[in-house]
Length: 183
Image (tube, rainbow, N blue to C red):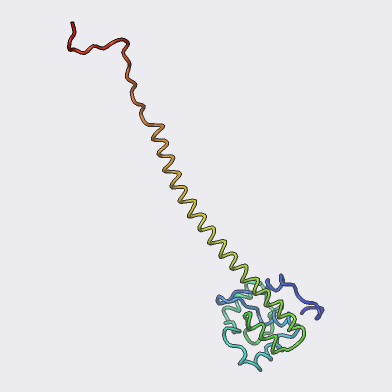
C-alpha cells in the first residue's frame, strides 16, 4: 500500500505496472487498488456490485496459466500474491477509469487522471516506435536501391579502367606514295 494516502504516484511508476495481456494494456486489480488507496477486496467488491459497468473490453479475469506466468515473471511466492482465492482481474484504460467512478473517492478520481495519462503516453510511445520502424524500413530500402546503382556505376567505371587500350598506330614519317603514278 502507499504509505501516504494523499501522495500521488508518478506517471513513471504507473507505466511500470501497466502490462500487456492478451494484446491489451492492462493493470492488475491489486496494483489499481494500491493506486486508488483501497484494499483489493474493496475494489473487487465495488466492481462486482457494478458489474454491468464493466464489459469485456474494460475488464477480464486472468486464466490460471496467465496468473502462473505472471507470478513466475515477478518471481514471487506468497508475498504480495498469497492468500488469493480467486484469479485476479485486470483492467484496461477504460476499466481503470470506470473503477475510479464506482469507488467514488477523491484519491481515485485524482489518480484516474494520472492513469489515463500513462495509457495515453504508452499509445504515443507505440505510435512513435511504429513511425520510427517505418522510417527505418524506408531508409533501408532506399539505401539498398542506391547500393545497386552504386554497384552498377562501379562496374561501368571498372570496364573503362580495365578495357584494353586501343593500339596506337605508328605514324610514318615522310610521305606515303600510292602505287599509282609512281615513277
